[in-house]
Length: 301
Ligand SMILES: [Mn+2]
Image (tube, rainbow, N blue to C red; front, side, top):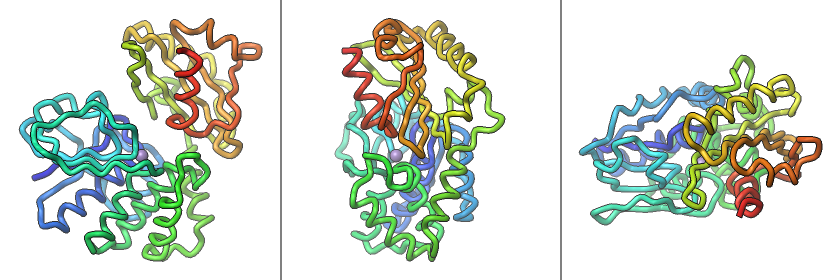
C-alpha cells in the first residue's frame, strides 16, 4: 500500500493533492491511500464538503513504507520517520528540497501555482478518468493556492486547468464558487493567537539558522485588530522555547494584496527600519513563496 502524504500543517493543496494523487496511482492499478499530517483547516473542510469526499486518515508513520510526497520535498515538512521510508514519487510546485532516495523515483516538479495543476495534467496524459469529486478537489486547490488567480504564482497552466475542471465539475458560476472558497479561507472567527500563528506556519533554513514564517489570509486586516499584542507574544514565545532566530507572521489582506508583517527575534532592529510607527506594511504582497520570503531574505542578508 502506497501512502500519499502532503506537508505538515496541511493546507488545501496538501490534502486535495494527496487524495487526487492516490486516485491517479489507483488508476495505474496500484494500491494507494492518502494520509494527512494534521487537522484540516476550515477552507479544506469546505472543499471536501463540496466534493462529498472523506478526509484522509491521519498519518501514523511511514517507516518501511512506499510513499509519495505531494506539495513538499523538504524532510522537515514530512513525517518524523520519513528517513526510514522509500520515497517512490514526488509531485510538487515548490523549490526542490532536501529529500534524497536510494532508488530511482518518479518526480513531477513544475513551477506552477498548485500541485493539483500538475496532477490534472498527469490525469490527462494517462487518460485517467476525472470524476466530478476529483474535479472539485483539484479546481478548489488551484483556486486556493492562487487565491482565485490573483497570486503572482499563478500561471496559464493553472487557469487552463480550472477552465477544464469547472466544465467537468459542472460549476456554472465560477465567480460565486471562488467567493465561497475565499470566505472559508479567511474565516478565523474564534481562533486563538497561537492557533492563528500555527495555521500555516512554515520552517525555513536560513544561513544555518531556524526561521519560521506563518501567513494568515484575511478579507480585511481589521479581523486581527484586537489581536496584534497576543500574536506578537506568541511569536516571541516560539523564539524563546524553540531557539528560533526569527518567528514572523504575514497578515495578508487578499482583497488588496497588502501584508502587515509581525516579527520577533534577532533581526528586530533591522526590520524596524522598514516599519512606520512599529507597523511594517508590505505593499503588493500576497504570496509568501514569491514575495514575502524573498523580501525577508534580501533584507536580512
Ligand atoms: Mn501547494
